[in-house]
Amino acid sequence: MSEINNAELQKTCLYDRHVALQAKMSPFAGFMMPIQYDSITVEHNAVRQKVGMFDVSHMGEIFVEGPGAEAFVNWIFTNEIRGFEPGKVLYGMMCYPDGGVVDDLLVYREFAPEHFLLVVNAANIDKDFAWIEEHAKGFDCTVRNESPVWGQIAVQGPEAEKIVVDLLGLKEAAGLGFYTFYDTEYMGKRLIVSRTGYTGEDGFELYTSIEGTVDLWDRLIAAGVQPCGLGCRDTLRFEAGLPLYGDELSPEISPVMAGLGMFCKYEKDFIGKEALLAQKGGEIVRKLVGIEIEDKAIPRAGYPVELEDGTEVGIVTTGYHSISLDKSICFALVDKAYAALDTPLSIRIRKKVFPGKVVKKRFYQTNYKK
Amino acid sequence: MSKIIEGLKYSESHEWVKVEGGVAVVGVSDFAQKEMGDITYVDMPDVDDEIAAGEEFGALESVKAASDLIAPVSGKVVAVNEALEDTPELVNEDAFENWIIKVEMSDPSELDDLMDAAAYKAHIGE
Image (cartoon, rainbow over all chains, first blue to last red; front, side, top):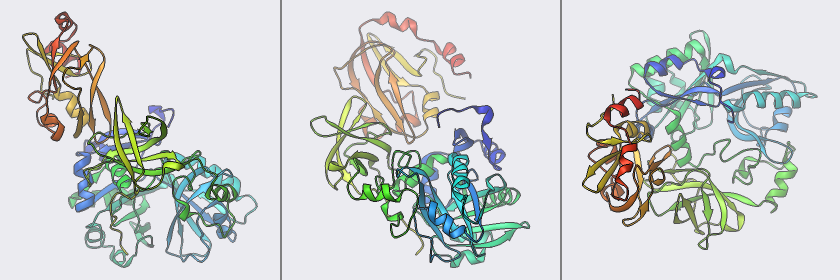
C-alpha cells in the first residue's frame, strides 16, 4: 500500500463490532481493520490452543460462470482445475506473462456446472477484477465482482469444528475434509462453509450475506470465542509457512522464487507458464528461504541477510520472534547459491549481526483436518 | 490513563530519566509500553558504550514492530538492565520499575531540554 487516505478507507460489515470491542484499528489493504482486541500473543495462542475468529470480510469474491468458465479459470490460474470435483477448493496464483504474481487466491468449484468462485486478496480486488475481465474476453463466461455484498468470518483452531457444528448448528461441517466446502442457507441467504484458513490450524471460513455475517459474529462473541485481529493472523500464517501477497509473492516474486512451484501445473497452458518454466529450469536469481537466528532479536522485513564476511546476499520479507516456537525466525529472499538447508546466513539487525542458518519455511507443524 | 511519575524527566520519544547524582537512569514510559503491546525483546547497548542525546541507543521490539530507543542525554553507559535480556515483558509489567540503562552524563544541562511530568502528560494527550 503506497498511499493511505483515511477518507477513502472502506469498512467491513463488522466495523462497528470491532470499535465496540475497543480493537486497535489500522488501515490495511484499503480497509480499516482490527489489528488486535486483546494482545497479539493472547489471540495467537487462542487459535493454536482453542479457537479464535477473524473478520475477513475484506477479502474479495469474484464469480466466474458459463460454458467456458473452466477453460478460462484454468488459463489464468497456475493450478490445475480440470478433474477437480465440485465442493473442492484449490490454492494457486494468477501470474503475469513474466511469471510475476497478480495475486494468490482460492478457487472454489461450485456445485453447479461451470461455476467458480475466486477468493482474492482485499488489496488486489480492483486490480484482479480488471485482470480477470480483460482476459475473459474470448471465453464464453461471465465474471462478477460480488465482494461488497459478502461478509466472511474465519473460525480457526482445534476447537473450531465443535464451535461451527455444535454452536452454529452447521452439522455437515463435521464431514468436510480440508480444502472442501458445502453450501447452505443462513437468514435466507447463501452460506458457504469452507474448511480452509490461513493459520496452520484446522478451521472454517464462513461466507455469507452482510446481515448473516453480523449475526454469526454476535453468536460467536456471545459464546466466548476470542476475536482475533490481523496482528495474529500474520504471526499464525507466518509460522505455518504461508506466504502473504506483497511480502512473499508480488509482481517481482514469482511462485517459483517463493518455493510454491507445487501450485503451478505445467501440463496445461496458463498465463506465465513459459516464464515460470524457464525459472524452474534455473533462470532465477533469488529464492525464498526460512532463516532461524540464535538470539531473541527479531529479523524484520527489509533487514539485510549477510554472509560471514559481510557480503549482502538477500533481504528479510517477514520475521518474528515466533510465539509458538519461541525462536527468532524469518522468511528471506536470498541468492539461490545460499538457499540450501543449513547454509549459515546472518541477519543484520540495526547495528548488530546475528548468525543463523537456513531452515524449512514451514516452521510450525500444521494441524489440518485430513 | 497511563501512569506518569512526578519528579522524573521525559523525552518526546517517551523515554523517562531519573537523576541519581551524575547518573541518569533511563527507561520508557507506561504510555510507550502500552502503545507497543507485548514486548518481546529489548536491544540494549553494551556497558562503556558512548551514547548521544537524540540518537538511537537500542530498540524495543513487540510482536509486530521494532521501536527505536532514543537517548535523552549523552554520556557513557555504566549499566544495562540484564533482567530484560531474558524477561523483556518486565517492561510491560512496570515500565518505571524496570529501567533499561544507566548513563554517566557528560552534559547534565541536557536535562533542561526534557519535559517534566505535567508537560509529558500534555504531550501524550492525557
